[in-house]
Length: 223
Image (cartoon, rainbow, N blue to C red; front, side):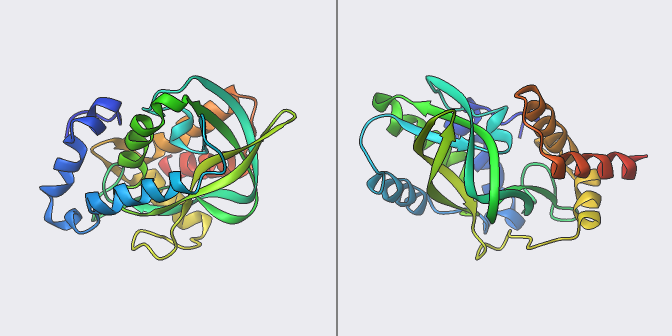
């Protein structure tokens, strides 16, 4: 698979999926197309109201959403916090040395970015989002209340699926830092995922002291 960037084009032309299908060790992780489509349909059927759809991003969606949107705002959700709890043997890791990416665990609160998708583009753009976030079923698409300024709107976000084989559980910070510091895959080094997330949050005026501390641990392990 080419390059280290997860792009809209790579999601649409199926190159990412083809890469996984041609790797026997990874093929079992893929969610069948019919299940992915059914997940999207069920999520849309459960939306609180017709019209534009908001998506809440807390990790790489903040800096590389790949889908088209018409508005972006910083936002906060309650009841969930981000954590490195999802193994990646696919993009920023390998079967021998898996990396870790973020998921939402229950409890606390999380600040991130919410994106508004225009009503007429919802089906197309959410299909791209599902191809990106739901190709292994590691997340549970969930409607949450996202607050931005004085507004509160329903938004889709992706909560970790604790039943999925890729769920890492509650690793110690030292164990997580070791994997993040050393893992790499076709989409690049796992540490860059962390560093880019911290950098873009800071540019938005969002402090995440847990992620900042993890970035410090990772840099220390790298010498």
